[in-house]
Image 1 (spheres, rainbow, N blue to C red):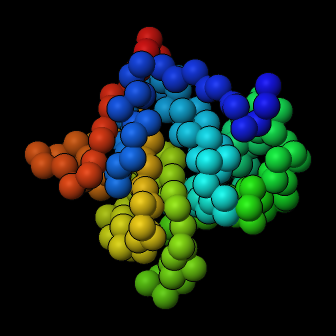
Image 2 (image 1 turned 45 degrees about the vertical axis):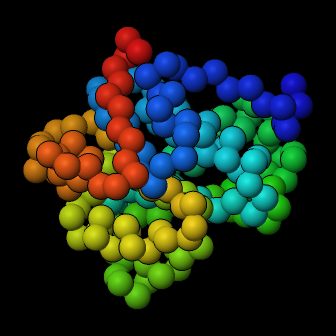
Length: 186
């Protein structure tokens, strides 16, 4: 398998998320492969876009073991990309082909000034997005503004009052949003 001709099988439920969209959301129960889908999509984008930059976000990130880093490392291993084709795994980040990187951060401690470090990001993936606060969402959305950038959200709904639910499952979706519901059976 050549890294440049990587074939990733995608469950039918996620196919609407394969096309460019400002906001991409996948919600549903545990075991529905939402995280696996976004991890694989991130790796695919890193191969397609030289210098690709992505940030993996949680509301609270006390340690990298709580992040999507291990899942991304597993996907690189699965596709034979770990430490080849421009990918390099470091303790705190993953380098991508063409001088890009995948970063990991928690939103809770960011301020309007500190969030500016995320400018120039191609993809922001919010994992466990049901815990993202309205404040964090309001900081994140205008910060990720590079042309063709995307914000991805994967979550297990808990309350309709959660910020991500209000934004992506409310009566009106933001312009450029594609949202799917997935379940373990999908």
